[in-house]
Length: 242
Image (cartoon, rainbow, N blue to C red; front, side):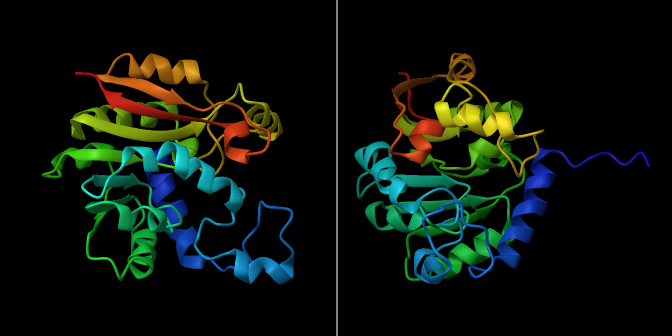
């Protein structure tokens, strides 16, 4: 067999379409070890709640999203998934764009956000197709998505974000961090990479990419053993340089 293996994009499309289509809160694996089977139904409200720890997310939103949006913000989320973050942002902005490579995820989140009239749903395959949208954005964010992307794909998204942000626009992104305590622990247990797992990079690698754009980091995360994401990953805020 000489079939070419699926690339990052095709793998993710297949993976997340299947995940969304077959998601069952009664069967999905919970990363939070403190949730018992009897608590599962109340704990899982949206697809994605099974990842990490739900209580760790509000501090992230309060620090990395809310300070950068207003009721007049035109906002984009790359990788909206089941809507676990979108539901906490959509009513605080003027327009909200749900972006995903998975049609099944977009179908799911349309149901979740069906009461909101300020939402646009955009199915993409290549990141570059976002430049065809006839709009510039005040705020772009992606949470728990770039951890699955390889460095070339992250670079492609950064170049697109650079183009579609307004001159005073801001972006919040979230990648892995090989230098973080829990990042290293996860990496050391991982035999190999595929898009269903984490692709490990360091903040210095992100810095190198950003130096080749018109963006600059204005805020970055610090390790915090009391928050899974802060102690495992790299979270940072970018702004267009004028």
